[in-house]
Length: 396
Image (cartoon, one colour):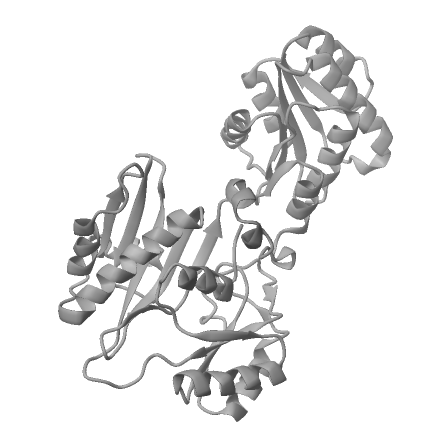
């Protein structure tokens, strides 16, 4: 589950991570009131107006601007709220901004120059360990840094059984070239950040930039936070932070009916039971010259109603040119799935306007194939992976 910047900062602050202070606003009056409150609380005279959407690169699209007066706060927030913000991480049509974060200006003059860093915490799936990834090149796209100057990206891998060790937090501060008070503050920052990652059951904390201020404080100026959906039962308050308006409507609909659906950008719809088989099916589609349009796990109860729901979800994507159904009949019998497919197809009528390839393997697979073949519908049946791949290729 993705969070807005202001929500992520609230979680970070609850674990003792130093963050840029800010107040969220949904209209210009609230924005001006928020700026006035920040001036009272922090002494800041300038404010940063930040669009709140689930996407990075907001500044490049005009969604982050500096206001040097309350009048500018009102004007800028009025321009941003309601705009269709387009960034490298949004769909081509962009995302509508419904709220802004009014934040304090933390780039004030002092004894030293402010310096921006990049820090993230995530799971390294290859090693099964948590990883702190960090760089001196804060404020830039980490992908560009990795491509052009990979030597400027550092990592610390943490064994979950032992947790973050003191020397690892010091390694981060040292590799970032810090000393004195800034070094100590970075050690404290990294320790609190890792504790927040573990305590919040997050799958990603990305702070870009982490700022060393002119008086050597270390604070999170931005926060991209993704929480593990599977752990939300332990965080009822976090579950309430979900913003459905920022999520794919089809994914939201699928979740409400108990289906695991993730939209992709391909042309072949997938309906599979089991996550592992789903991943293999997407590989199969790529090898056939197509691209998966979605990840969809229907689970172990692929009856007619569930299959029909899955078909309708897949066909909401206008890019879908074919559908591949790949079911292993272990818990559920293949003939029951086949009958569910036939019943769903007949019930949907003209709503299905693309070829469907069905591969059923497992219990009663032979009976299932005969049911499909004798149905008289525009459904092709296969037994082997290679056979299904060829049918997908011919359908595109």
